[in-house]
Amino acid sequence: MKSVYLLRSLTLVVFCTFSLELIAQAEVANPTFPFWRINGNAAAATNFIGTTNAQPFRIFCNNVERMRINPVDGEIVAGALSSPYAGDLFSAVSSPTLPFAVNGYSAQNGSGTWGEILTGSATGFSAVQGVYAGSGTGAGVLGNYNGTNTSNTRAGVLGVVSTPAANSGGAGVYGLNNIASGNQRMGVLGSYSSTAFGIGVYGIGFGGGIIAGNNDVGVVGWRANNQNYSGYFNGNHVVANGTKTASVPTTKGNQLLYVMESPEVWFEDFGTDKLVNGEAKVKLDDLFLETVLIDAQHPMHVFVQVNGECNDVYVVKGKDGFAVKEKSNGQSNVEFSYRVVAKRLHFPDHRFGNDPVWGPGNTTAFSQRAPARPIDYDEAVKHFEEMRKNWKPTPMPAGFEYIKELEAATSKKKESSKDTPNHEVPKGQ
Image (cartoon, rainbow, N blue to C red):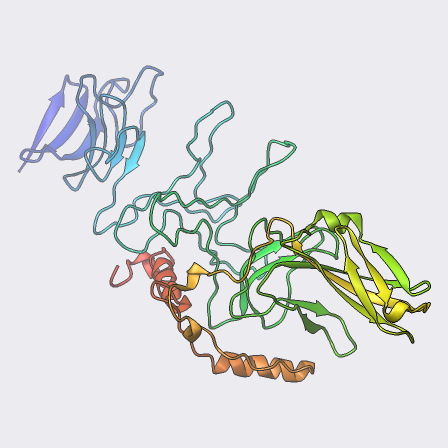
């Protein structure tokens, strides 16, 4: 049932009697009457649409409230009557049918979402901040590159520090795990799909680059040449179930040379000298002496090889050097080479030392025999392919987490992003 009302003989308005739904509006007399028309108004500076008392300004659609502006602080809320938290100027609350609360899109030369802390602010909050408080495997912030560029610089998350030009400091990406108890707390975790080849974490120094080829590497540090450092550790550096090697260029490709290991911490030095009338006194390098401890409890070891005919020799050790004397009062004049080994300063009493990472008791099950690496390049490539194809997980102590478990958790995060058709919520989420 419809009724027609004439307001002050100025505007003809047609209403549904029961729902007061506006059906039509016809201007009758005065076009300047302050009435918001469905085809727009030529508003004055003082005109507004809203409320003049302490009631919220509510916007309805299909007779359901969709948005409101609350009167106390001007908070704008879509999808709810108020924000879950105080202090929000604009708040969008999702629903089962619209699970993504805020979305930004751009097909232009701009970003889908932009946040900025303006100049002059000293806040500790970020321009864009995300918090995950659920019970699933989501993240506070998810960045997903789903474009078509194939550059190595494409990234799911890009962090840039632009200013100020201070003398030091600043990080493009900074990870902080702020949980105050427990273990396995990681500031930054890097990984890649086990169905591909890749590098878990890559650091590039001055003049460095990104390596090519089918490589499986946990961490790479790369610098232009042999000056300065591609990696630097202040503290213990441990290699478990592997070797410490140098990769050296040869006519048969780069070959690996391996370091010698010891249950104690030794520094060593080498040199040559000459017996004169059956005797020589060797003064050790002053810098070498600054790095070692030599005393009665920690004597140095001296190994001598005579490079000529004589009656054999013996060594008399001192605190800063040693003497080499020919036996039987010999008077030979021959050269010799020597090797000196002394305990490293501040580490004189180390012998073995438990590594608690691998747990108590017998840990031999957590190590495997490593097949010898081929010297030939093609054979080495084939060897690595076979090892990867036939790989079996090495047993690990209780509490360790395998890469497959990490990949499964990461897969859930990716599936929960909005790259599904029509932004449908993935099943099981």
